[in-house]
Length: 372
Image (cartoon, rainbow, N blue to C red; front, side, top):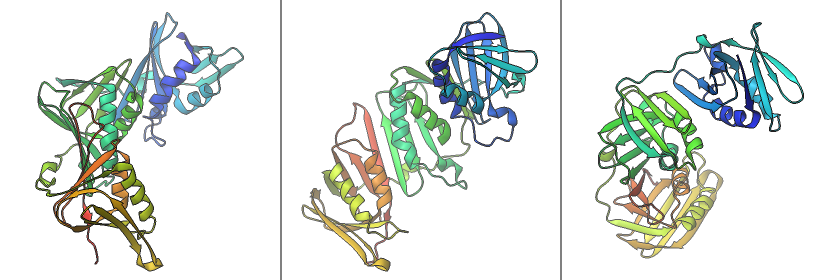
């Protein structure tokens, strides 16, 4: 088995696949990339048993076969090469020999048949989305997903597909983000919970891609196919909480303010807040928003006044500044609207501008009790 491939082309594909491999694996074979050669097509796979990703590369070759090559060693070597063709020859003595313009490098390989096979999806449903839309949906929601191992369903992003549109939801019980696209539709209703790791991989790969991504899914797995790559992952098992019930419907108090101004103000004032609660206080009266924070233990306090457009009753409400900052950071609009009903009910943050046709983002942040 022998093939020739460009060093930078191979490195670019392997760096993406390397994101799948865990730093410590239970099965030693998972520390390898699986190389499967079929004449001029080379398919390279990486897996951590939950997520498997494979990319197909064009190479020069007239042979076939499969071997597992140590990932870390191969990546470290490829990073040091300038652009040049590399020749891989699989020798009989269980080593693979790589020849470059200047030298030869031999590394031990494992039998490709030991590598776990990717799951085949039986009878999947299918939806097609463009890459940049999927990447945006992931990055707008994934930051709000929880990290609690005791509530695994909340540690992923909930995909809800219907004939009306696609909805992506993430929550950790303190904050919630719901991202909707009405310009992309599925041919049938489906719901599943995607884990964070494969989503982060997809987000990185698809950020600027306008190619179509085919999403196939069944009860237990999802498969994403795009360009020359396939990613298959196991879904999080369980029922997602009824997030619609948490979103308050009647919010008579509406505050409209410049996002940047609000974000910078919250950032500055929060430096003076209590380090465990990160609590800041919003006091709204007329067209004035007063943002303040106090850390009684250290006698630190800060207060800022901003002008805003406000309709509603005068009110005071407390928020965790970290959640507010994260949410404002994840919006790209010039102005945002914060809707509130009472100091003990969730506030709803939405962008006023900067959205595509058919795109909607609703962010919900739980208040913290103010000790007056």
